[in-house]
Length: 114
Length: 114
Length: 144
Length: 144
Ligand SMILES: Nc1ncnc2c1ncn2[C@@H]1O[C@H](COP(=O)(O)OP(=O)(O)O)[C@@H](O)[C@H]1O
Ligand SMILES: Nc1ncnc2c1ncn2[C@@H]1O[C@H](COP(=O)(O)OP(=O)(O)O)[C@@H](O)[C@H]1O
Image 1 (cartoon, chains in turn blue, red, yellow, purple):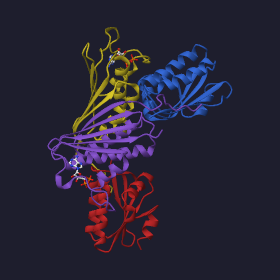
Image 2: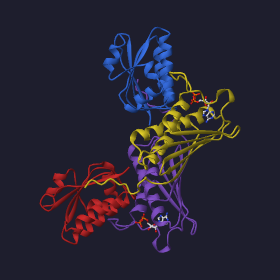
Image 3: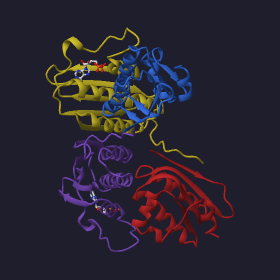
Image 4: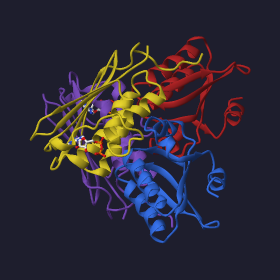
């Protein structure tokens, strides 16, 4: 019932953030801090990997939206990797599929950034 | 949070009962019925496969002990298949390791019956 | 001879009550407990996930907006029709200027919590006691 | 850069209350809810399994022996030392001739429930109200 955050060594200027576990009101500050830290350091092209995320709530979505807003101000973008059908459904219902690029694996999400 | 019970086609006079799920005060009557039915039909050599059982409580242990008692009256026996460390621990704590043959796979449990 | 346990045609009927501190770290307990209750009915996995998220959003709102509630009370009632969950806090209730948001503009950035609850559950009722908290009653119907 | 969430050095402190019908089909809810509470402390998976089983055995005894209790009340208190769980029913209490069994004879055929509770938890106290139910208080210490 926790979240793990792992930031990979960058490829080019793209950073991949692997998340695993559950993103809720308790754990989302951790995710927010990790993403915020990257953006503070001037990294504006991010892939956020939700492949191992079993659960996300509105506070988690809020963190992703907040990150996207910030990088867009610098001409960057955030792509997501997501395969879990329940989580995809949440992106559908909320209309967030229209503002995020959502991919089936990290490679596809990286390629789409270039 | 349920139990599934599957009785395999017999090999010789040995029946294998595959259990999967959780055995507790709610689900153990199902297990008791399945084992009781086999014994009623005169099958006294049983392998009870707990490989896919994630949880067992004292009512589940009671069902296994009850089955063993009944088949022993007819010169039969019950061998168990169990690999889950938490469940093995329960057999240890209760001393039931001394009255049941406990094996790592169905083949070994079958061979030990002959 | 595959025999899943389904002794009641409509699943298990009864009431389960849960009280957690009105703090972020306890929402996971509410979520898992309510999922375990939902699992006693004949819900699909997807339905159970819907209920989990709706309850979590309700609890999150108690934590973020109730201002001064110590506890969250969650009551689950299972019936032949499905599951009714009440989520109650004892805070000050929603400030008038920011009541439950409209559902018109897409994408829903901000106000996602109530929007998700309304999307995922079959009926949703807010009963607000201005200085004594918010009482949310929501139901999920089980497919027959 | 692997960062598990451990904001409180001893885990989350607080009280969680759960009330379930005194019926077999609800024990799984108690088990999962208490496991979720235990997961808020720094317990090992093995310790959490121990607590789950002990709580389930306590509930099973309420169901099988309390004679006429409608509900089971389960209270979990997390503290820096570990988890305290109270399991209370409102039945008639143990019949005198079959109080908690001795722990001497092996293998323990019959009386396994209380034996397991005592084996798996660090402290166990039964408080019996002859015509008003059984109150079991048990604790599991968290390793520091
Ligand atoms: N339990 C509650 N106590 C007080 N206000 C609430 C409660 N639940 C919902 N609200 C109100 O409803 C609004 C919408 O909630 P929500 O859709 O979750 O979006 P957000 O939390 O991002 O504002 C909140 O801003 C708040 O004013
Ligand atoms: N909640 C309870 N209400 C009444 N009697 C109880 C309760 N818990 C335990 N007991 C008594 O303790 C005895 C031992 O219980 P246990 O070790 O679980 O074995 P068993 O349930 O097989 O008898 C029970 O037979 C019962 O008399």
